[in-house]
Image (cartoon, rainbow, N blue to C red; front, side, top):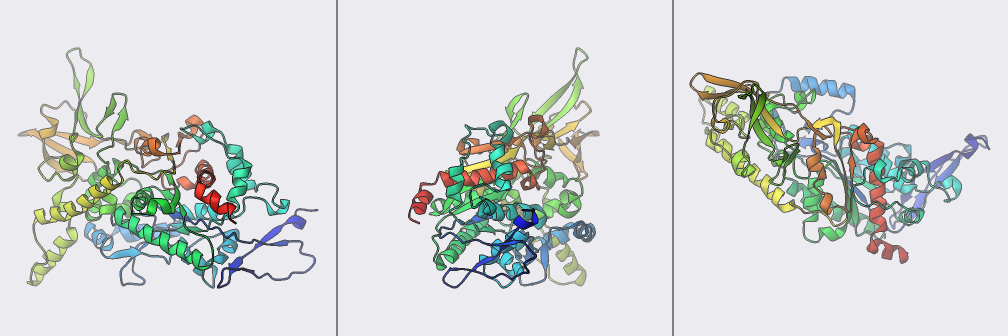
Length: 575
């Protein structure tokens, strides 16, 4: 037979009101040798819930159907348009648009299922591909980052064995992406590695895994987002039960901050048992010093135009939103350096010693309690997190307009009041840190990067090239350019310039290895990817799920969760 003779076309299998399989196909001429394949759906359903990272969910302004608050660019043209829009946005504009109290999840974004996924989505409610993808939550997510992993999971978990072989051979995806990669070193496994056997895949193939996107308002607390995830688990599983299916538990796959959402969800009463297992990708498990850096100095590269070019623009958004603040380093975060384990915030200068050798003199900043000494600090400490006069530019603008018009003042014109608003959000962030500290689902799998070609801020280092005569902790802030350069005064007319050092820790460009490693004691398996140095793919944080090694360990982890579940094995035996 020629290749065209053996081609197979997947026909969408839908459900009637009772959950019975239905399918429709169009007859073709005898000259078209393409098989029409209709899949029957198993009665046992374990939904896969994909939870994205910060800024990975589209947001809209409440009560404004077309009022988009956050619409990540899906193409180069979209990116250019968005950059041009944001070039003129002030700090006050950004604060008003990205207000956690006036935004909500937007599920009307474009979804990008491939042809196979469209057929598999046919079981979802809706009259069109777009409606069915929307019902699955795919339109909530940033398609440019997540469409590939959503379609891969949907297609691969539905088609484990090649239909052309009458179910005797694995599909090419499972062969090349999973089974042929089962080497602990190649995958970066950090714990004793158990390869998958074909029998594991045969058991897994007897389960239906519809893939759902579950976005959330990433401006609000991840605890609240965890509660939303709880509600989605109940809603989604109830739908499949209404179709006569057995559906009690889910598997969660997360990206970045979505891992904090899932961990918060698992702490809700009864939810740990509703979750079969969790796969975390590049999770900032104990925070990331980059969050401090960005609040003090803005984002990097082209992202700074969209996310904040300086401290003023970043503080206006992040100080007023608990979600981003929850990415700050927790009390458990420590930097690994050639000098051992130490606090992540420091300042230093260079001096020449008595022997004429230049040496670095350093001081740790806020190394007692990061919450009291750095985050809640509203003293005159130059290295504290928040500058009070940057917290509420929108309120300042409203008050100034009211003054010009001779009307009543709007709100309190007081920096202490502004700091209290921030403090409320920071308290919520600390509560989330406390809720999930050292807390992981009992069936946790994770992967992270420790790539020396994708450096991340594993510490924040203020450095001066000049020898300083004074105590670095007690210096006075004389000037701050809001982009990582400050002038510190030690005595009258005795000023020194300090600059933030660039990222130097191995990671993925955002999350340092220290934070990615943190789940290790609690995980069934964790995969460490060190880039080309260890023969691994090198990936950046936002696009990690596009890397084959990440896709491989994700599929491996899902099947391991299934294979190790006594509940699922008992449910299969009853089928």
